Every structure is written in structure tokens, then in C-alpha cells.
Image (cartoon, rainbow, N blue to C red; front, side, top):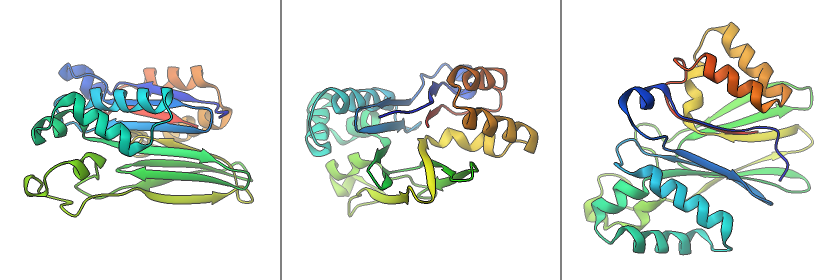
Length: 215
């Protein structure tokens, strides 16, 4: 898959508190993935990275990967939540459409045929969906006792020339003043990865949460 930007940066609040970056992602031949670990999960970055590693290096489907991950971290529900509570975003390009499958929070970045950049937020509200809930005894869960599944959005190439995905750390720059927000959009439009990374470095205080962008 051909992308212009792949950015994975730790958020300022994680730097200040000594936490690891809980985002991870990769660009594969057919699909791109972003996983965002839950801050309440003590080691959720481990699950996010392991999921991406297995998805990138094997032909396993998501069910098999989660069965393997549960075997690695153990069957105790609290262990699964600590290590495997992460959101998943996937973007695939077909001949006619860009298709985004997602389970949990994040953003879709759209560039229309006139070059305009549009951000579409994906949110479950106060309680994001984590696919690991399907592998935890429902009596141990407060929310999503009925299980969770992926949602899907499709975007026609007749309307959009480019579609990307991002973790929900993107929200802080979208709330910044108009000048900084527009500067960030200009870097996205340019497709220049290093300049976009340098912009984030210069404005790291704004990017309080981890951010991963594939665009």
C-alpha cells in the first residue's frame, strides 16, 4: 500500500508521566493498521504491538490472533484487560473505494477531489470498544457485555483521492487555534513526512496524547 505519511509519536503527557507510547501501527501490502492502547490498561502498548506484529507477519485472521494473545498473557480477565485493551483501525484500498474497518476510537482523514482535508471522528463516547471484551467473561465487564464487533465505512474514489487513519491523539491539534491547525493541514497535504514530524516536535505541548497517522 502506497502512503505518503506514517507518523508515530509519543504524547507530551506520556513523556511527563514516564509512560510508554501506547500507539502502534504499520503499513502492509494490502492494508494499514493503527492500534491505540487504553491508558487504563497497565501494559496495553504490549498488546497493541504484538497484534500489529502478528497481523503484519502472518496470514492469521483477527480471531486467531486474539486467541494467541490470550494464550500469551493468560486467561485471567484482569490480565487480558491490562495487556489487550486497544482500539483497532484498518484501512484498505480497493479499485473503487477506500474502506475503513474500526473497533474503538480514532479518526479518518479524507482528501476530496478538490484537495480539501476533512476529519471524521470515530467515537464510542465515554467507553471505547476493545475487541478483547469478546474474550472476557461478561460477568467481569461493566460495559459491552453483549460483545463488540467492527464497524465499517466506505469512501468512493469518485469523491476522494486519498483516505487515511489516525489515533484519537489527533484531537488536540484539531482543537488548536486556526493558524496552527491550518499549518498542520498544509503539512498533511504536502505529504512530507519529516516536515510533519518536525511540526509535531515543535508543538509537542499541544500533542498531549500519543498520535499515529497513516495518510
